[in-house]
Length: 147
Ligand SMILES: [Fe+2]
Image (tube, rainbow, N blue to C red; front, top):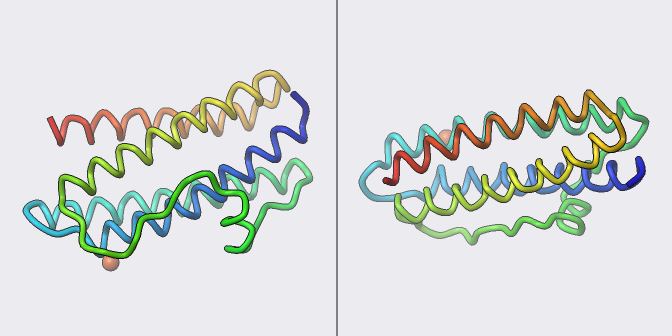
């Protein structure tokens, strides 16, 4: 693993966060059924956090001398997360879908953490560790909500 592997993966991660940002708006707008009010609000909390995270990742890329992808065209080319179509979604389905998305981001975070550790890139390791902690905690809460 070299620095190029890391920056490539960070750009894919950034693209996925941008897809997730829109996807969470999709849930925020299109969720319907019981639990609407709390889920509508919670999905807003999630996309607000994602908007902070994607900025953190982009600025880390700049800090290590790389240019972050910054166009939707590039994001679609490199993203590995899939979008969701614009239609009504039940509360249950929306929560299950968010759980899937966050597990996906958790796995990606663990993958990047391993590369950053190998390269002894402590700030990137630290950034990923914080993301992992957030995804793990949020997944605990979402799982508790659906239990
Ligand atoms: Fe809104």
